Image (cartoon, rainbow, N blue to C red; front, side, top):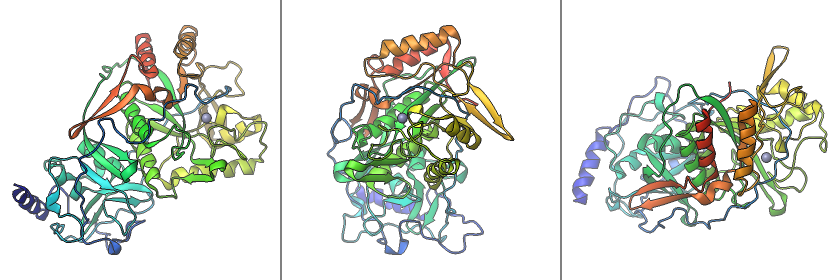
Length: 489
Ligand SMILES: [Zn+2]
């Protein structure tokens, strides 16, 4: 039976399968994928048999219980303007197309299990590695890419439409050993939910078989409400907030929010600094297994309505840890030029990953008048209360010359801790009753205990306990009042 399947696979691959073999006119020479040298790679990916052992409940990493207290976010803030997450923001490199010959039929050669060892009904496992070690999960512009020519047949996904660059968020690369797509494009194309297993440095691609919640039905006359997920940062799991397990749950959360509104704002700290642990993590430069998961998670959230913003550069100073400390405000003086440098450093990290930030937010919303003025002349949206407001609580647009900046406040503040449901409900009720902007922010770790990722055979189901989770209950109330999560614009 396996032989028959192998022959079938070989025929499909020879026929070009679902992948276009056309080559752009300008595809003269064949640039290398950044981060990997095609020459150094084995002629054929040494395929490993799927690991049959995985927990019923996703990621093997320790559950890291959510702190009951959300990180403290002082309040004082302004607003911003809207994003339209560009579906395709090209990494710096141009897509490269390869030789036009058909993809070679995988051969069986030592070392490594033969291709025929792959069970066609299994989920597929990718192994993280550098260029010489593996060809399955590779780095392009610090973004994870996978060989779709291997993954799709291995998952028996033969009837997918041809890959079209128009439907991709990131460039594709055709190489002699197959077609490479970004992990996010491949996941969206095939309906997969990747799970990162730290212990074996692998990524299991599961078919996403279901969710435990119903999406809200469409509502055309909804009043916009704004939600910002706070303090997202690649902390290597050090804080317990962004372990691999919790990154999976962030993706689950994005799925949930996507079914309950059109947009969610992501306050991302681009450079994670933890002086005590001697860690400075720049995900645009360091290709590590952890960062692979983090970049993929950002990609995933942006694909599902996420609007990425810069929450400072490091959200700390001196010996403070990112997300704990402040960076601006009266305790930190900067010249205008120094401020602009700091903004540029944050933007450079986003830009290196192909992201265009949609807003800025000062860490802990701490800002002086000078800092606010420099920022509003630079950014088109600042997501906190405008310090120059005469009547706080609503969106304000401020012009300086030809530049215009939207300040978007969060009058309902945020969910202070895991037991603050009644508190946030009261503040949202105040917004509803007084006509202030329906806007608040939330630290995603607070709902992690209500979320789980359940693997059932070869499928994976996302569970969000809507009775226990804070956000599901809040969104239900907002919906009852006629609000839906949206982007400001
Ligand atoms: Zn913060």
